[in-house]
Image (cartoon, rainbow, N blue to C red):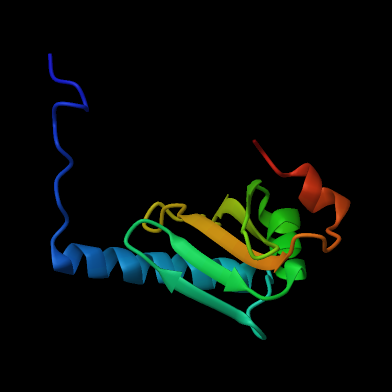
Length: 125
């Protein structure tokens, strides 16, 4: 009997990685458009072969993604007096050709800055 610990995951070719990035970028952009999520201002995103990483400078962006798409939040306190807030959520899809993709929305702000109750309530251990 073979287990997942014994069978190594097949490495993706460069072309497969590029295809996955393009698919994930399309899924992200489609989600932003269809769900009317913030897409301008101080927001950057990068599609990887396995997910989409979103960085914003405004906590309202994280709040909007949480409100519309749901998810859970993890925080990391930095020694510089800042806290990294990361929402784990997914893209929206109604097509099997474009599967749901993990999205990580991250905002860094001062540790003592107030946050909306809904955001604080979504923090998981």
